[in-house]
Length: 313
Image (cartoon, rainbow, N blue to C red):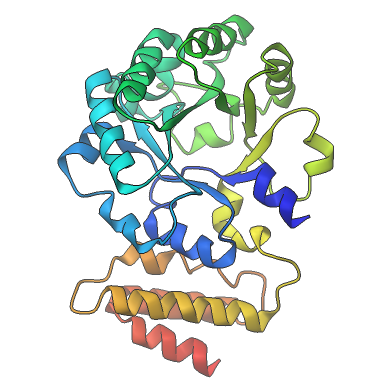
C-alpha cells in the first residue's frame, strides 16, 4: 500500500502551509511523498531569497515549486533560479481565484487565456530543463462548459506539458472568498474523469475533497493520481508508513523541533515552523494541552519549552 501512496498521492500547494518547514516535516514522515510548495509569484522568486529556506531539505526530488505569473520572461527567470537550486519541476498556478491574484491577471483567469500559459511554458523550457506541470479548475463561474477546459489543455499541450492537476470545482470570481471557493462550488469528479478519457496521453491528477490515502483501487483506472490539500495539513500521518506507533510520532516531532532549534540558533524563529505542529497530535490523548504548549511556544518564541514539554509528556 505504501508504494501506491507514494506514487499515486501528492500534497497540494497551500498558501502559508506548504512552506519549507512543512516540507521538511513531511520528509520526516515520508520522504518519498510528492509535495507542491505554496504559490510563489515569479517576481518574488527573482527579487528575493524566498527559495533559500528550502535548503533545509537534503533532497528536492519530491518537491515541486508552484509559481504564479503571466509574463514569459519573468517566469523563465524564476524557473532558472529554481533549477539552479536543484528542483526538477515547476507547477504553474492557473487555479487560484483570490481577488488579488485575479487583479494581477494570473491564477484562475488564465483558464481563459491558455496561449499565455503556453508562452510561459515555452519560455521556461527554453531557459531550463525543468519539467512543467499546470494546476487549474474545471471551470469559472456557475456555468459548466467542457470546451473551456478542453481548449485550455489542447492549447498548452502544444508546448509539451504532460501533467495537469485539476481541482474538481469551478472557481467563482468576485463573489466568493478564496476560502469559500474551496467548499461552496460543488465537486464534479466525473468532469475530471471525462477529461482523462479525452486526453488519455496526459497525466491527469484530481484534487478536491479527498480525506485519506485509501482510494487507490477506486480511482486508479480513472485518473493518474490524487492530490490532497487541507486534510494533509490537518492530519499528515495519513501519508506515514503503517502502522506508526505513538512513540514513533513523538520521536519524529522531537527530531523536527531539534532541527528547528539548530536552524534558528541566534535568529528569530519563523512562527510558521512551529504552527505546523498544532495538529500533529489531533485525535489523541493530550491533544488540547499539546496545542496550548505549541501556542505558548509561538507567543514566547521558545522552542526549548516545546521540546521539554514533549519529552516530559
